[in-house]
Image (cartoon, rainbow, N blue to C red; front, side):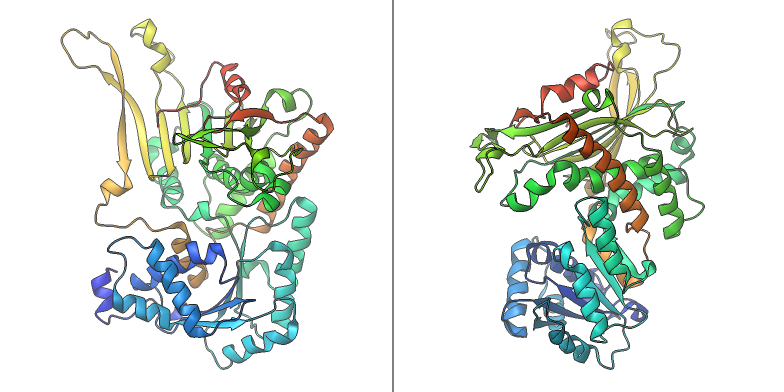
Length: 501
């Protein structure tokens, strides 16, 4: 619904999807930077039912008025020109309330029960807090009789530090909420391009019939971060890039690329196929651990022409840290569809660009008739860009124009840029889509428990291998694409990273 339609008094959202949202950690960075802007946009677009209420919960002293002012200030900083109007903003802020709460003290939770008393709406509990206290909050909500049989819980990653801790946290949540009412967020799954990947694969015979080892030579997945650790030393040095990015974001993207067609679009049908991919991922053992995996750690360099410190020079750094800020690897999905097709994954901090993309490299024609010196470019590539600009491009080969060109080939894209293709439509943020699906009670964009645990099993064996080898991460200058070894890893297969950014 457009802004003008919503602001003229039309019904807001489906009344059956109205909720009471209890947002724990409401003063945190995630809430102010992502969640409140997403909720505001849902309201502005007419997708939030009129009776929906939002309670912010945090440990600091505020009343409803001061809390609304904080949210309003955060929205003013983050909304673009034309994305706010007075009526929508006033309506959204009027939904907000605030409760100071010591999350560890069960007695304070009675105020939530009183807030909920008599409400016909299901409660959604959003835990924008550290995973170690998920269980305590869930148990206190249950003990205070704040929940009912329709209550749902939304939890943020990372869920655990390894398989053991993940099981403990999920067990604690599962004591209170059944799996059908647990929504584990990986915000990449809410991105428009990721959802289009499902449509691209399963609605288009052009790709559906080619999506296998007979036609695809290899796949690249790159998630590059331009920033360093941004004051998150305490968390990041314990986690590292493998736990922080590979275990969730990259493996989720790999699953969507590699999974077989689900029987339908139901949540469990899609997630069943993703679990099959995780089970089929080859582990890194023996020589493969040194040959097919590269760990890196950034040293001082430049970013946007400015000098930036190395990882060990960041504020509060442990100068002896061996934590990786970069990981590149070659892995394989050991099943009939993908046998022999390498998947190259890389992710790192202090890269030259902020970039998330998937590149599908199709095999060359078996018989080549054009200029021999152009054989290296004679294949098609499907480039799926998640950020910074979402879009999909298919690189095809055509004849170069000109009377003097002969049959020289020229690569060029058939390009779908979402911003250009839908100029009157704002591309919704991932959290908008995810929050909307929570309101609807639909789980297909969320991660099931067994997905997380299979991902941890695969990562844990890699981490254990690193510990046994006790090899320090390779250094790379900030502002580069990682250690030289990551280039050598793919070059030894006669390939290179796609870097036509």
